[in-house]
Every structure is written in structure tokens, then in C-alpha cells.
Length: 310
Image (cartoon, rainbow, N blue to C red; front, side, top):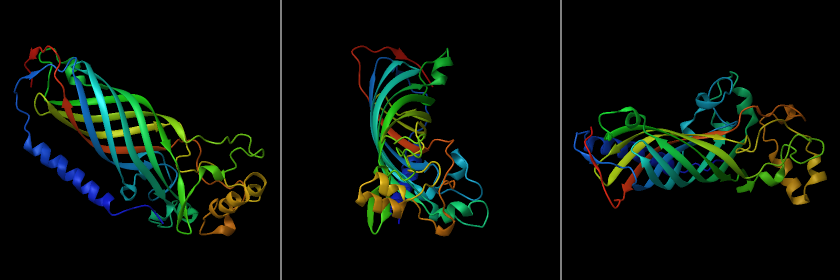
């Protein structure tokens, strides 16, 4: 059972069509633009978000980053931001996003290769995500061009720091159960002193790669990709090994212990699940990636300088 509504497919289609239509409508002519230095810009962003963690993936051995990227787990993103341009090549931004991430071993195409153990593991999760961040956008062409300071088409690199809040859940008997309070890998149990309870608010580093198009003095749009380096391996609530399920009765309330014993293993081969059996690789933190489209509105300053550009 996955929270995978039909609108996610429609969202990706709309994203692609909108980007193509806007790009075709506005050409990269050489009309002159005023300097953006000292201006404020307000932006709205939509995106298509994908989780890359321990669950799901593609054929073969699970690996970090793009190897296990799955379009099947696409979720929408919406965000707002405000940016102050310190110069034509540098902007400082503050922003907020709302999105979701999910993953499921059942989505793997099991060919009998090394992916088969993840498919038999049969775990899944869903989480909403709230993000708040500050970042710097650098426009390298504007930085190094000594002739013209404004380019209507400008690639950019963005990097920042932020906090995100998540809440992993899994389906059970038609309901979505919060996983973090169940300590499914023995977090906080004296038998596992190295496993501390994880917090639902964590630090992350956003990295943006994209291209911005200045439509006119007021409007611009950007397309690109946002990568997030997070500080946790528990966005999907799994990281290391299975534990002895009798420990749930020792540490949890009766209700939570009952839930934990049903959710700690959902394997299709339950007779193979034993305490300390590896459930996931703990050396790589989770990440998620967004393809985004941003529409921006600039505000006039009290004085303007006039530059030629291309």
C-alpha cells in the first residue's frame, strides 16, 4: 500500500509541458536590462520530488545517489522564497518548501539478481516534509564576464543550509502508523547503546543547479535540479539491522509494542529474519532530489543603473 495518487503523474506532465511552452515563447534576444544589484525578488516554485534512500531501487545491488532513482516514487513540491541580490552575480535567499517522500521495496522489478533481497524485505514508507533554508545563488557567467553584466540566459549554482521536518509512516490494516515512536531498530534500548532515538527535525544542505531566464525587468523563470545532503539515515525509518522483537514488550507501551512487532519485519520470507540480520546499509545518509520550475517577480529599487547585456 503506497500513498501514490494519480495526480503525481499529472503533475510531472504539467511540469514538462509548462517548461517547454515558456521556453519556446521567450527568445534570448539582446534587449538591454537594468542591473539587478540591490533588488529584491519573490519567487514561487513547483517541482517533482524523488527520494533516494534504503527502500526501493532498481536492478542489482543497491547504491547511493542516482543508480536507484525511481520515477515511480515521484511526489509534488511547492515552495516560496525571497532573494536579495548583493550584485549581478550573487543573490542571498530565504525560502520554505512543502513536499513528500516515499519508497517501497514492492516497486522493484525483481529479476532474481542482487535486488531480490530488497524485494523480499518488502518494506515501505511515506513522509511529508517541511523545509526552511537560507542559500546563496551564484551566477558564474555574470561573475566572469567583464564586458556585459546581465545575461538574459544565466546558469547558476546555489548552496545553503536548512532544517527539514519529516514523519515516516507505514501502512498497517488500512491505517498509516507513525514509525519513529516504535523504535523498530532498538533506538534507545540498552541492548543497542550505539543506536540513539533520531529526531524528526534535521539539518540538510541544499545544492541547486539550474538556468535562469530574464523575461523582462520584472519577471524571470528558472528550471533546474535541487540535491539535498541530509544529516540522517532515518527518513525512511531504516538504517541498520533487525532486532529481537521481544524487546518491544520491555521498552514500549503495550499498544506500541503490538504495532512494532507487526511492522519491524514485513518480509516475504519471515522465517529468514533473525536478530542482527542486516536490514540496510547504514554508511550512507538519505537524500532526495527535486526537478523544479520557479517563477520570480523583481521589485524596483529607489535608483537604477542601466547596463547593456546579452
